[in-house]
Structure formats: C-alpha cells, structure tokens
Amino acid sequence: MTTTRPHAQRLDELTQEIGTATAQARGGAARQPVSVVGRIDQTAVAFNIFTSLLHSDGIRAALYAVLRQSDYRFLGIFRFKDGKATSCVHVDRENLAITQADEVPDTATYCSFVRGSMKPFATADAASDPRTLGHPARDVVLAYCGIPIMESDGTLIGTLCHYDVVPRDPEQLNLDLLVQVSSALAQPGLVPPYPDLARPPAC
Image 1: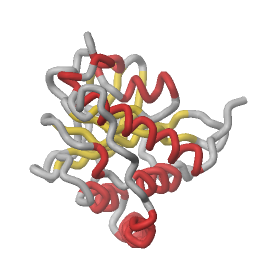
Image 2: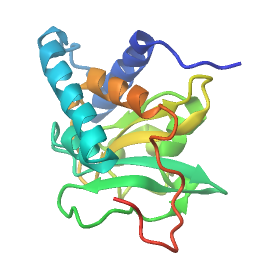
Image 3: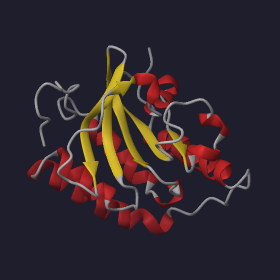
Image 4: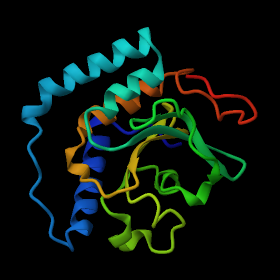
C-alpha cells in the first residue's frame, strides 16, 4: 500500500523537479541550489497567513495569499473525473471574478504528469521543454509547477498547481510553503469535490 511520503522527501522531490525545469529552460545548465535557510521565517509567516485565511475566509482566499508570493498568474486545485480534469478551486490574479478553469480531457493538462508519477512536475517554458513535446497544452500553458495533494494512504485527491501562459521561473516559488500547503489541504473535507459545471462554482 502506498502511503504519503514524509515532508522532507516531498520537499526534496519538488526541489529536484524545479532544478530539472530550470535546467531545461536554460539549455541544460542548472543553477546551483538556493539555500532555504533565509526562507524559514518567511515560510512560517506565509503558512500562518494561509492557515488563518483558510479558516476565516475560505480556501480560495487562502490560495490567493499563496499566489501573491509569486508572479504566476494562476493557482488552482485540479481534480480528475471520468477522463476529464478541471479546477475545484481557481484563482486568476488578473481577473478574480473568474472562479472556474475550463474542463478539458485529463491528458490535456500537465496535472496528468503529477497524477501519473504521484510526484511534482514543473516546466519553466514548455515550448522549449522536450518533456512536453506533443502535449496538447504545450503552446498554451507555458509555465507550470504542480504538486500532488494526497490522503494519508497515498490516494490522490488532486493537484495544487501554479501555471501561466508565459514562461516563469519556478525557482521563485517557496517550495517548503507549497509542500506545507498541500499537506494541509489533504485534511478530510477541505478540498471541494469535482465541480458540477451545470452550477456556478463555490467561492
């Protein structure tokens, strides 16, 4: 039986994936890992803000606070159902009135890479990343960083993902914060179910 991996292991997996993504964007030249020591206090503050907003204003407000830590346009939680994928929570910093991403075939999202490996996937510029060759989103979603949200037994709930229509440097992301947030979201009942697209999504 698969179980949720420890925080340190998940952080290491995400760090390695960010290194791969940035190396691909730079033609194979990887940047030296950035020390996270200086981010410890910043991470604690950011996670406390996330937790406070989660309880006071709901999951979307909490994720917006996380999104504002970066220059990515979108942050969402994606779920899968019957060969389809869409957001159950969606934040567009350029238009906060939009609360729902389009529903697409599940293989048309980079989240399918996360689901397939149960590990993070990131690309800084999908158009120049050989790992995305032939992928339907390659010319539309150019930047992506996704991490699985898993139940304690390792069952996938969904994916927590930053993405954008222009290239972005994933090294700007606070990886420790993302792992903490994904773990917090794994609590029973926090992540909304796959949306009924016949009705307006909840905020």
